[in-house]
Length: 175
Image (cartoon, rainbow, N blue to C red; front, side, top):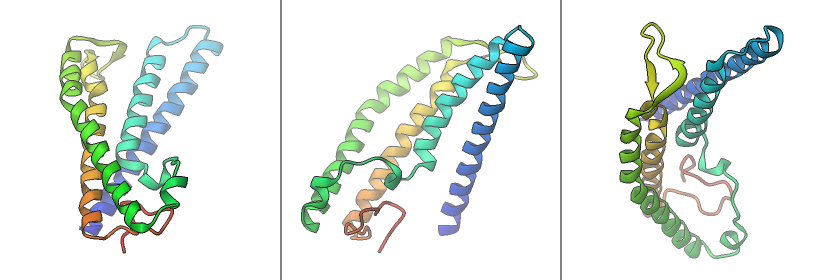
């Protein structure tokens, strides 16, 4: 199981690095077409925006670890381990409930976006514009990922498998 998680992590890192590379080269192409050719390509801006949305939500769903986020934990670390345990359970439950509460309306909105399509970016070889449903679907994936991650965190907390002593304890570090 550990090998599967390592493989998924490496694959996620590769995917996000690839998206960043495509974003960078698309941005360079946009600059070249605008300032050298004096005829900007319309699709480059839209592709950069699409990639940015995917990079942010894919990265937060699968690449960025909990310990990598900025936290305001002065109060948390000023308390006892038992209180930290309670804080951790409450915060994980709050995140699950809020994300879960927004999941169905979000999925409904994403489905509704199938009517709208990109302005300039087309599917290669087919020439069809991309339905915005596919572009914004990453947000639904992000919500599901966060819900699963924090449910997993609660499970590990209940089994006492997360070190609450460490300032950098997260889902990745177990006792």
